[in-house]
Length: 309
Image: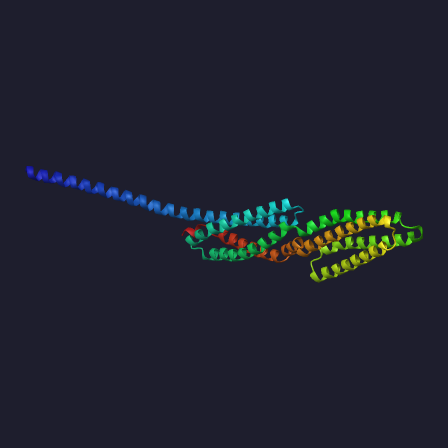
């Protein structure tokens, strides 16, 4: 074999080795790429599915927390606790909205049309729930019925007792000949005040405006009877008793002013109205939202490895 033929053979072998090495590299790249495509893609889908399930579970937790906190705000017996629970309800509501905004794109990316529809259904129902709940919480933190009740059991009762005591002081100075007449008139005036005081409780608890109007008419009649009695007493008591009668009249004016405050607070009816809304329309919306979230959880639970194929 000539030298040239040997050189040509060596060159051919070197070229062959280079081709085989290059082919090996390409095969390695293809194998890695194939392995990456076969393993990473399903893993990504499973991760997104797991995240969707987590967000849906958190949605239900946060929604339950929001509803419970709002209910506690309605039932709270002080302004401070009512405001605190209302704030807690709003924070949980914001968390629900955050979860909804995070979950939507994931469901769309997974092409889960049924689940996306259920989330959209929940969102629509949640918007109605949130609008109603905002109105309920605004009423709840006012606590007008509770404030009226405290006023009735506190300042009003003290004013009524002070009126009774003032009239007793007047009767002690009444002339002998008019003593029983004065005592009878004083008792009539005190009875009228007590009647107004007793009528405050049903007025505070009443939700029907027509019924409240009827109670107020009875209050007005009792007030007129008391004022008429005070005028009659002024014609019977001696001049020395008139300062005490004037003091009794001032106490009565204070009592009627407090009663007017109670009527105003009671008419606002924030506690009664918020409770009625919570037990009525809100319960229906809450159940509807929970149904949507339950259906969404069930749908995602049925998604498994089939979601990766």
